[in-house]
Length: 109
Image (cartoon, rainbow, N blue to C red; front, side, top):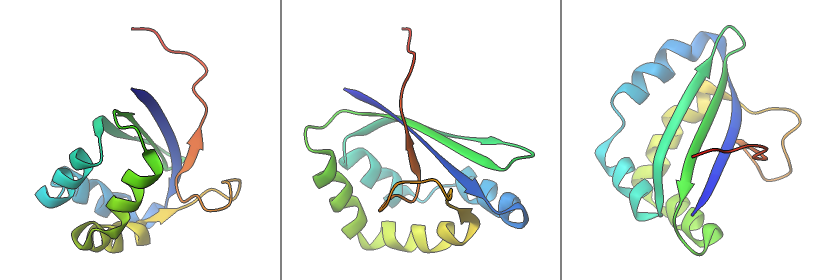
């Protein structure tokens, strides 16, 4: 299992919409998240900076393949089409990232 953490900006005028969307995530999207070996997934919002922090446990063996599987799913693409306009990626993210991956510096069970 690999713990993952990511950060992303949220447009101030889209905070309410983003929170509303995530209060009722589409069941097909949740099914695809599980099918891609992701468990214990949370997204947090830090205001007033409007930063989103996501963390999850990846239980698969090929993260790139699982992320490609998710990206190819039509229902996930529809979900992203409503969520992405709310988001504002960090200028400092690595090439190819939307959510900027963070390094884990501490963990305690």
